[in-house]
Image 1: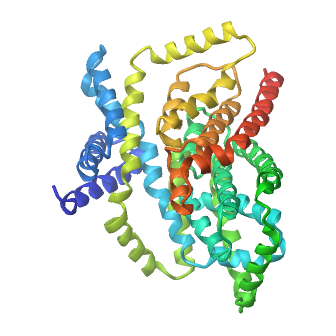
Image 2: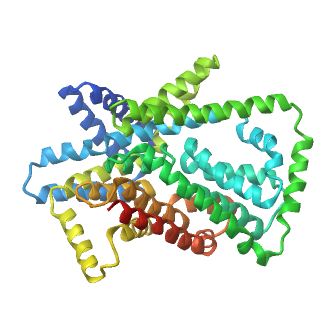
Image 3: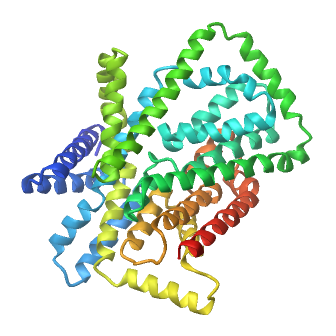
Length: 472
């Protein structure tokens, strides 16, 4: 069946599911909940037709496994289907709204203005490396893993005459490490937001803790840079200064540059600050609060800029040309929800707990916090993306009473996600980077970042174990 006929049906299901999800969160209407279930099933059904079963293997596999579990356990099949299709409703709403943040980022030359404004602070290879790692984390707040190709293209535009493996390693390791560190603290990244809510952890404690670790990881990355690139015998600073001088010669309106930079800072602070403050003052689930804040933030931006006409154009284009093609993750979430709902009807969580405690009995010096990152990494190497892994792992941990502070569990799980991003050649961040720089996923991952990943694990796990001992 042609995509041109399936695409509108898929889009209607996505929009219908999202709108009804937010309505029924505040007003319990049984008829609308039933409609929500049908739209959820429509997303997975039309998604399978749109992508084709072979391209939707993982979501369909998760979904069908959940269905089989419900057919084999002593529970109502229809009640199980209802629970499964609604299990991840918060995540579907979040994933539909978050890509809209990029609309604002495209309105001005924010990246170009930032480098022009801060040229004195990035005029050596180490400073520029620090800038790439740090700025990738900030842009990830707006674009998620879309920050990787955007930052890569932007940096390549600056370093347009600098070629070779040495420069590709310089750019690639900084960008990938920056994104890997962002999953430890950036609240708009769905995997972080989900595990914070699933573990019922304090948002501000999780962010501050993750940000502290991200700062430590950034410092380690900078210390690694000269050691890793010594063999290339390339003067990165000289090449960088030549390219920056070239950019500055073409920068004319410095007042306009300052205005755009101030606007970017205001946008970041307003989005981050509003989510942070409202989460403390309003009794609302984080996965519901974030998309609602984002929608209001976007609307306020276009109202202040007097560009509401443009917002309607962008929204219309997004619905017509992009929404259906970005529905893969929505199908994954619905499939994962069905599997998680099915597993809660079995003794799977208890089996996991007993296995972990049995391992602790054999090796008393190992506790669950040591193992959580490896659970995430193993699933990452199986081809499951960070969000899917986080949903499955946190879904299991949700049903387990663990003797640790929830913020430490959040850090342990997100550490696994971070390491998976650095190493797994079969998940999107490394695939996107390899597609951008032309190097293999193995080289961008294990070869360039293997030692860094080991050091990051040791440092963060040392902190986790010390805190677990102190608070225990």
